[in-house]
Amino acid sequence: LKTTLKSIYYFSLGFGFTSIIKLAQIKKGPLLELKKIIFLKIKQYFVDNPIKLGGPNIIVQIDETKLNFNVKNHRGRNIPACWALVIVDNFFVPALRYSVIFENRSAEVLLYIINQIVIPRSVIVTDEWKSYSSLSELNIYQHQTVCHKYCFVDRNTGTHTQNVKSYNNKLKLAIKKTKGLNLEQRKVFLQEFLYREHHSNDKFTSLIKLFEF
Image (cartoon, rainbow, N blue to C red; front, side, top):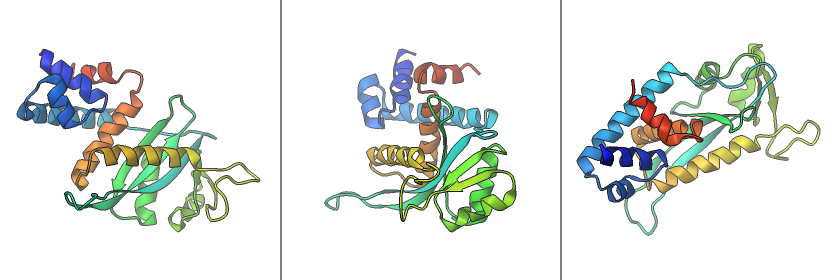
């Protein structure tokens, strides 16, 4: 039990697989099984507690980002890049976020994801990528844009996507530290990463509570 608790503790802090083995003195097999259980519980948590962001007149920033990992000095193999849609709501402290990997960058897919996560009457801020253009036509949200070709902060309205861009960089760095994950592993990683982000003040205790159900 002590070894399991140690493993959960280091996992909650975002330690890598090899580091957890050394620090918690746990073998590879049991740790793999524990990680599977943790992921299933995190997955069920988000089913029971779906993420909803924004609200009437609350600003949410949306952006898509490319996740990739390139090996150096030809050591290992390059993992194909993938795209993630990222949504940030800075109304809360700490900010609430959502990210998901998607393989089809069509407007239909993006709007479906946005409608699942963003509460009606929210103020959505994006860049001027064409797939976002139909947001205004839905009459569900207020849609503001900033043209990154000319500026990062609109001089007239103050509109920007700096918060979501900052989170994109944080996400990319976290992916880079894993030293390469395939597509399915990245999907798992994103949910784990989101869970830690949404429980940044009680990462360990929140994971322990998942085992109470």
